[in-house]
Amino acid sequence: MALKTTVITGATSGIGRETALALAGQGHALYLLVRNTPKGERLKQEIADKTGNKEVFVVRCDLADLQSVREAAEELTQKLFAINILINNAGSVFEDRQLNKNGFEMTFITNHLGHFLLTHSLMPLLQKGQARIINVSSEAHKWGKPQFDDLQWEQSYSAIKAYGMSKLFNIYFTQSLAEKYANKGILAFSLHPGTVKTSFGAALKGLGKIMILLARPFMISAMQGAETSVFLATAPRLDKYNGGYFKKKKIAKTSAIATDTESRNRLWAISEKLLSRYMVWPAIVD
Image (cartoon, rainbow, N blue to C red; front, side, top):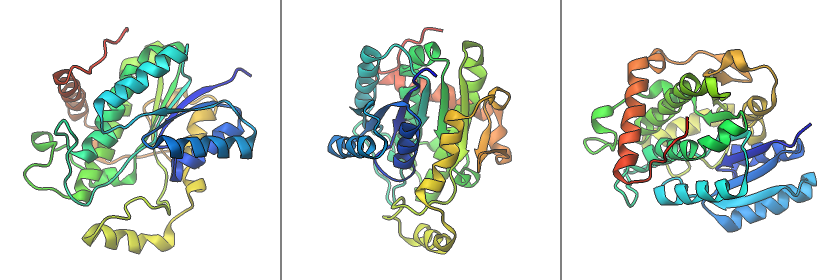
């Protein structure tokens, strides 16, 4: 079987780390897109030690920095002929409203806009690889509403609501990719990994902290949380589920608002416009 070339964001901890280990064990050539390169190099060595797979490479990519995303995409474009799997796994939640250097709210750019730019910057390689694009969303999308009049949360900030909206946007993005690129051989899926016992959300206070504490007895391990990502990256004959949302390795229902085509199309147009403003929007070869 031909070696699969897989790119994954947020691989240095939690679900991402377990996903990387599992796919390395199945012989994938891995490109780990990480913000902390020393941590990425340590994971690379750990993967080699545990799986014997030395086809693991570290690429610096800070999803909250648009220029860093473009530089990572350019590095991959120079090194690779094609990409077979792209796992947009990285995500974060912020107790207080924070902005990146371009003035984007950090939840929005880290969980949505950075991955939107990365995916499109890599689209020529993804098309050549007849790729699967896997976006790690969450059941938290059911808390989210598309707040298009205040994407940067300038009027009133809530960590839980901002996170929920970003996870809703992951689903919108997935559906749009499936619609726009199916005829190019692209499959796109979103997923809920489960409520996973990791350090994610450790800095939250108030209601967010209470919700995490209440859920902790029911949380699963990061290894269990990675199972659906690994399934979507490796299972055969998933074409009929293109654009679908998965839980526990099975197709699942989203919230009603997650099926709103008008909102989905509006998000796409706004995302393109925001990136064009900073001259980082790539020319896509359709």
